[in-house]
Image (cartoon, rainbow, N blue to C red; front, side, top):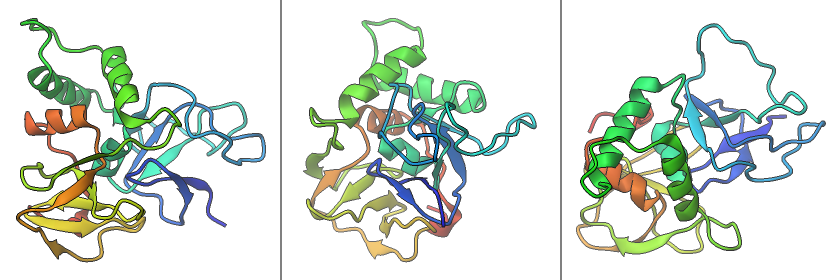
Length: 212
């Protein structure tokens, strides 16, 4: 049976046989038997590479952080994660630089700290009841790499990419839909992350979506 450690764009942690192309964590979420007991523990939600400096881990070791897996970086960003400052240091700096452009601090030239990003994302990704925060907005003008929902009560999310909408699945993007010129959608990706994407940060997207 597959473990419950795969993350959807909505931030839900589900069981799926596919590993995905990125790993990440939100702290210790599982018990001694490997069962998920909480959706998050810390505000530091990161997305990491699958391999780094030959380090080896046993998935869901008791009292250690829960390894989470993502189809691609766009999925992780939609769920509310940001690049790891250690194993993805270059991408973290790119994200910080784009964030600085999108969210200037009174003319300061300094990049935001990881804590500043984490605190802002934490405020944006969850509602008071800890459910995923969604905003109703126009599809037109959203940058590539953002996730949306077309129906409020649906769990199906769509990647905006290359003028198309791609339905998400744990195994990849199976088909492409024409992108309507005008339509209200529920925006899944946090607004601050969308700002960084608009400022030049391009999320890494699974090969099944093809080129833009």
